[in-house]
Amino acid sequence: MPLLDLPESEVVETFMERGWTDGLPILAPTPERVAAMLAASDLEADDVVGGIPRRGRFLTAELAAVNAVMAGCRPEHFPVVVAALAATLDPVFNANATFTSTGGAATCVVVSGPLAAQVGMNAGHNALGPGNRANITIGRAVRLVARNVFGAAVGDMDASSLGNPGKLSLCFAEDDPPAPWEPLRVRMGYALEDTTVTVMATDASRQVANHLTEDPVELVRTIASTIRVPGTFPVGKGGQGVVVLGSEHSLALRQAGWSQQQVVERLAQESRIHPDDLVASGVPLEVDSAHDMTPGADGLLPSLTGPEGIVLVTAGGAGPGWSAYLPGFAPAIHSRAVTRRVRTSADLVPDCGPDACEIDLSRLALHTPGATS
Image: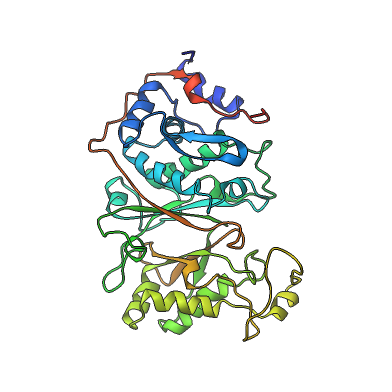
């Protein structure tokens, strides 16, 4: 098979020129590194992870491994990457739209389970920010696949009007809450010892501040006020969202005796909005559209599909009263969150050395921006 032989010093610039990166430097996807990545999974190179049939494009395990290497993942990160990619390629997620819509959706990746800590993911201080290799590179690998395999690049199929910083990488781990609360994977029907990946197409995160009270009703109302911001596309139409409870807020809710189900039920109720509030904010009510904006019996419109529309997790380090909300980028009729269990191989293969720079282009199969498929 044809190989691209490059000095190490030319790899990054060559990939930049060919449109195969997200603007940041990459690691050369040599055959040795790709093989090490694949060995950490239960997949063969030609196994199909998923695809977007509408575009006639499909993702093999090898292509996933190539992009994971480029993103800077270690082999032990790869099973999480594969689970995230399989979830994004579920038709319910609607990758055809979420990867390329004008709304500029990020792919938010939430990892719940013991494997997250084993591979070094961050669920504590700065969980939604930079500084952790596993968080950043796993999320980056998902987006590089969107770009390089499915054409979601600027100048090609990515029609983002403004973009979203989370499109570079948006990945974090859940910090399992103390009993009687349960981690996300258990609430979704998986075993405690399992590790799951939940993906949702979201806007960038919005920080929620309430440093002044531990009253559970007031805390939930604060978060709900962030959910029902009129300028958010799903508000009034029924969407989904990720609610990340910081340590102080989750502690206050637990100490008040609230269950997680009570929290999501109250959030769904408190985040409803009156049509007049939308109109007063300059948002006309849609008529004869795909979005049903008929008020309920109480005269209110839903911001969320209901309690089931909220992915509720705990994460973050100690600090005075911070949480976060990541709204779904569009109403749930367009895209919904998907969860997959992570599968691993019995033995993990270590990284190969840094000096190999022979790149198999036929296996790389990257999509050049502007090229037809």
